[in-house]
Amino acid sequence: MSSYDVVVIGSGPGGYVSAIRCAQLGMKTALVEKYQTLGGTCLNVGCIPSKALLDSSEHYHAAVHSFEEHGIQVDKPQIDFAQMMNRKAGVVNTTCDGIDYLMKKNEIDVLKGFGSLLDKNTVQVSGKSTTKVSAKNIILATGSKPIELPFAKFDKERIISSTEALSLKEIPKHMIVIGGGVIGLELGSVYKRLGAEVTVVEYAKSIIPTMDGAMGKELMRSLKKLGVKFSLSTKVSGVSRDGEQVKVTATNKKGEEVVFEGDYCLVAVGRGAYTEKLGLENVGIETDERGRIAVNEQLQTTVANIYAIGDVVRGAMLAHKAEEEGVFVAESIAGEKPHINYDLIPGIVYTWPEVAAVGKTEEALKEAGVEYKMGSFPMRALGRSRASGDIDGVVKVLADKKTDEVLGVHIVAARAADIIMEAVTAMEFRASAEDIARICHGHPTYTEALKEAALAATGNRALHS
Image 1 (tube, helix red, strand yellow):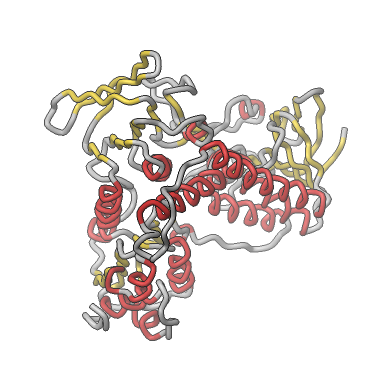
Image 2 (image 1 turned 135 degrees about the vertical axis):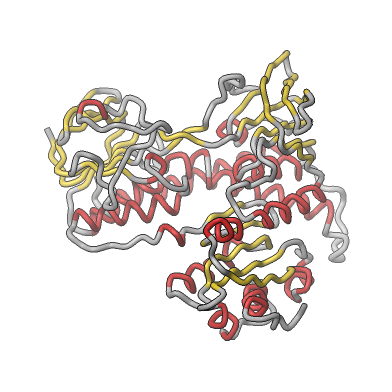
């Protein structure tokens, strides 16, 4: 039986990054993966393929709706959907091949098969054959899977999860999206830009309900201009299929029954921790009511040498959060003193415009009784936005009323995913709104909107609005 310092179960962003860091720190490391390709949900059926389709759909939409305004005359563009999907697959394959390369480069043994715990130092790998390996330390990084509603079972053909939505053979005529969160809005916007009718049905009173309320309103305005339809405060009670048609039955905020009919129904109500058949019971590790593994501040489970990271533990289900935890655990095992500031992990929605946020929402500050000041700046007042035609959106800065320390930054804008990192950096070093406002920003850039919002937060000093 082979012996390792660390065995990582799961090769998603948390798992493979953790394995790399362990190897860099001199530990003999193995990575266990049940699928043929490495990279987990993110690289195979999540972050990477969805962004590939988002970019392709945005290019097509720009060609149809914006090229003429820019003085570019073209015949009406035609969609080669098969090629669009082939490109997406190529992006995925190249990215996954890159993980294979990194494993070889760092001399990490990749064990193909389903990993489970036999005891606190033994992992069974069940693949074409069954093997056992011993480990001084074990890291559980098995990720998550789409949540299936009891009245909307996936048939993987017409009633689908995000996995199937990334590999459709045709553009839907009418896609009904249950869930107005990140996944539903991203994929809904893909197919709307490609010509589908899209209706989003959301139980909460706003879309992206976990983010700042003003951002949800701003994004909905933009998506409505795109043609996406919304039914908020609507509780779905049933989903049925008749051939190629799907019917969604729900109750609206007035208590009336409403029915939505389409040819596809994307159920995007969140993801649940994947811990099935891991053998947790063999070592006495329990899960909470949401199936997540309990961990301490060092990300140790109740068994000291077994750690858990990413979507299987508390916190936001984000690839970059899992990566940080993977590095944190590797360095902790090596005796180092790593650091993660969970308050400063950015959240991002890759629609167009994008949404990005870090820190406290305005609603959270009000609930906590924190005295704060707010400054905002509309993207349409920005020279760079007018030059590119991306005028939808706003930047909002929240700062402590007494100290001026930045408490939260919320953005709807082109390239918000990139802009937010300036705010994350500033907040990591406890910057004030005045600090951001005093930094010279290149002109014309999208990040000038952050400077202007910070100026507004310091006392209505925005220069261009």
